[in-house]
Length: 194
Image (cartoon, rainbow, N blue to C red; front, side, top):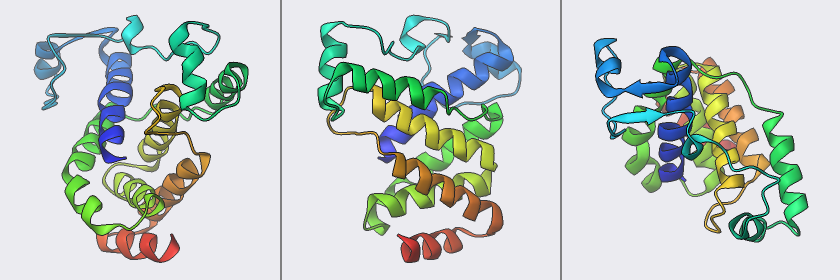
């Protein structure tokens, strides 16, 4: 889960948020000139408008898209496509780009700890939501939760799967993070609650 969340933040949140601030094509040197130090391997150019950065089209009937509904545990391509469209209507506001960068750094920092500490996926979702909200804000945590599930829904990867409850638990953790002051509170409450 952490690796997927890290990848999701790196590609979806950061690129979308940064491109909305600095334009559709982001050059590494342009970001550094603006005082943003990413520490990411983005390559020389990131084109947010290119097809590689866009979500799969639910109406697509390519062989890969047809197989996607099966790996995502849907009965038909139409059912999967309808779920993708419905999930997209629920997209929360984009986070502040600086907060998105901080969220990525936080996820990377907390990976080893979380893997060794938590007994189940829901505790990890709660903790991630809490910590992101503590270090950034509720909006960033909520968007990361939504985007992680969107990514799971559209990645055509049988190892990950969309679960709306994961989103709900992450947002619950974000509410906790806004109200709490320490990571210890996130740990204790998430372990007790899930």
